[in-house]
Length: 92
Image (cartoon, rainbow, N blue to C red; front, side, top):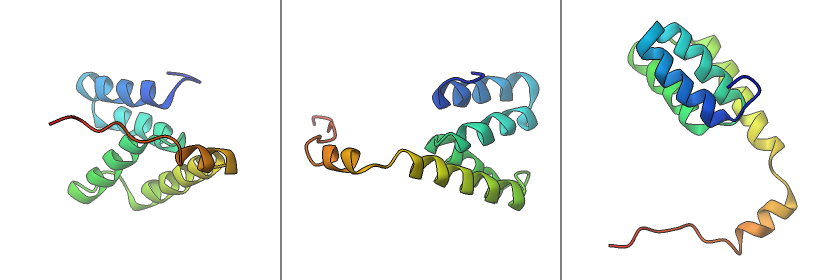
């Protein structure tokens, strides 16, 4: 996960939580959220609300880093492409 994809970091956090505990998992989620991973940001938010072990300052820094990562991927070309790509909807 070092220097890798945010989803790899997210998955590593889930594995490490079971092996090493929530502190190590939290560090992985902070890194993944800073790379723009929505699932890690959600995990941090939920664990801040539930148990409070994700401190307010840490959550704030993760939110700012996540927003910066998301903003860095925005471009006029991507916005234009979204008009032509429809999300895949499950069939019922």
